[in-house]
Length: 125
Image (cartoon, rainbow, N blue to C red; front, side, top):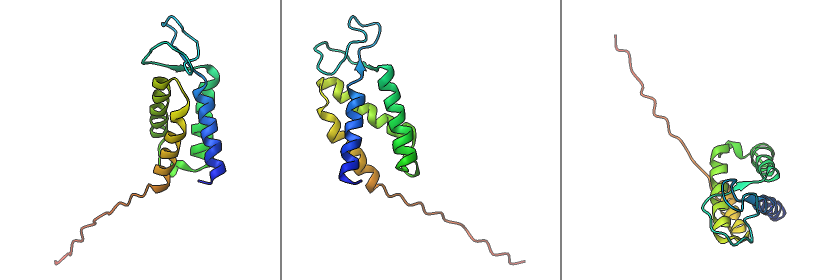
């Protein structure tokens, strides 16, 4: 991926990370997680963050960049969710850059070959 495209992808992912909020049953429900001080193991996205995530995965990565030839939508979402869990743990957007770079590197180096062995039967009748 070109450096400018990678930087744009990182920036878009950071914008999603900024929309992480505490879940509704928690005392600070709806408050931003990044920069927060309250411990939690769960997070959600604001409506804006959820839409940004859907747009990034479906329109940017799967359709525009053609990642659907190697990755499924579910796989990309799981990987991004893992990155956002690191963001939640650190209360900082700093894990996003390394996580996105690793995901892009994995996509670019993905090479899987399938060998199909077809038995040949000779009819000796």
